[in-house]
Image 1 (cartoon, rainbow, N blue to C red):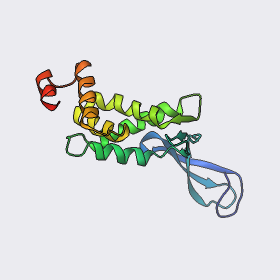
Image 2 (image 1 turned 135 degrees about the horizontal axis):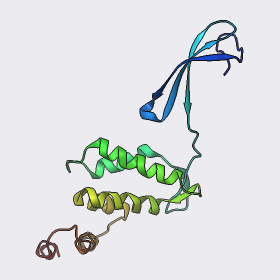
Image 3 (image 1 turned 90 degrees about the vertical axis):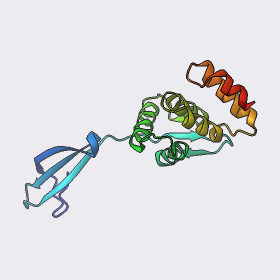
Image 4 (image 1 turned 180 degrees about the horizontal axis):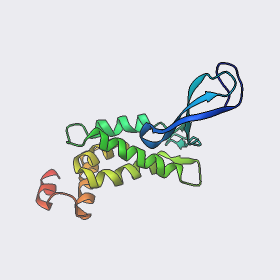
Length: 163
């Protein structure tokens, strides 16, 4: 590590500790040439993930965009924002562990829906309505019936009242 003061390349580590919730290591160093003390951070380098959108455009995965969409879908559902951040963290980790660096937006949407189906039916339907671009009430009914078949939806009479 190069000293920011004298550019000497030898330093010693005085202290190391976990930072950013365990995602990086903070190190206090001292230059062996000029005794200047400085801090460095060590992080795992990740290769960017490319998202292939429906319209064929490719863009870099943006976790804040996904989190914003989840927060909007989960407004007034009682789900904690920290829990939604954990969903995004888990999804990003799954994507990083894949052998390919390109993923379709539909795959990401399905992974999110899988998580939401176990957390909140309302959030699931709200997210699905935007992600799957619902055009009519029948799209909502079909989604609700799918939830009901999986054993997580409301009763059949409630679904019949919608149709």
